[in-house]
Length: 130
Image (cartoon, rainbow, N blue to C red):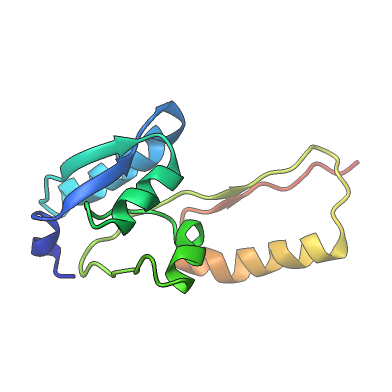
């Protein structure tokens, strides 16, 4: 989707206090791209957003993992937007002094080596040794 076409696209957005950070990331990215979003509907439930988008009432910005089943079923389609970058900070957290299994340790090594290359702002906190 060309960036300019996004300005004419009605958006369905997530709202509510727990989703405010996602919304601010989206609005900031759109503003940097010179786009003022045409927010048509706002829900505090991701399932409602997906349902409304599936009926053709607008588009939404969601994590791919949140729509994987609907995309696989052909109900929704992921559309890349040329020239739009939406940064996100991800963190891995766990209880202090928690034992980390070899599988979890392997995942953390993978995350540091692979994901950090794609998302420069990732912070992986290390547990304090027991």
